[in-house]
Image (cartoon, rainbow, N blue to C red):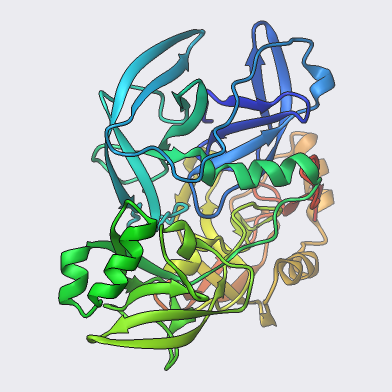
Length: 442
């Protein structure tokens, strides 16, 4: 269970801005405490591009009024050298820290080959000095000129990472579009589309050496103080390969005829294709580039069968997988009796169970029903009556599973179902941000 400090940004609507660490297990119940009141909440949204999430509560449940700071409306963001006040709240007390913005950069998170947490790329963030200590799953508010200009948050990283936590400052302009949507709609925002490449920053001198003309540099400097150019560092998945796609080394000058003034201009789109003016191998080109659909970070359907936890693949899996072989992704597998249970991180797409083709989680549910042992109810009744059983008499079936690993390798494994220790069940949640989880046995 993760706990942390969030920020109530809209008491009339009941919206709380949190770290995405709070939402790393969306199939959970949530609550928060204000004073002596403990209030239930739902996970309204996990942002797929930036490390924050939003909780939603019923405003009528909170009999408490308090002032709310205004959100800065500027799209410029905090600049290097700007003074800021960091507001923190931890374990019942609050404090303020005076700080200064000392750098801005593109940041990205990482993962190992054993687990695939939500990953972040192309996030332009600021860093502060001094930077206070804060809870791993908390956010801190960064204020300037009496308004909230940004948030300070720890980025969820690989569970096997033994280094320092990646902490970033996010301009509030990255958060406002999500809040505006959730203020006016009962549904989560439409999934974004992306270029599916990772960018790196280059200064004007390097960009000119790579073929960007002096005129382009002068034009950009006239409209932006950042004086930065965005070069493709690597492709993130299979979606953007092809003759008309971006390749490593390309510098993107314009999107649909407008100069790129910040990474936000390249972060997401609502069209299937964008027109880019680029420099490739020292030559300027105008190309039409397809955008890739970004998997939703929110989870709304979870199936457990034979100890396997299956869900739709989230977008960090999409980034790392050679191909998406099915929409039934198995992240972890528990087996053994409760006293000697073991867990395995399978990281595989299930494509066949017991000779039945698997494409979706609904297919898994249907097969689970077909393979359910007819003697299970009788066995459970005998267990309740304290009947003794010999080893190997627990009802179950030997089943072959065919799957595709993250790296594209196909595997076949045999498992034995155990409807007593590992009964099949399904967790589902509706599309509305207020919808709660419903549990049912399969």
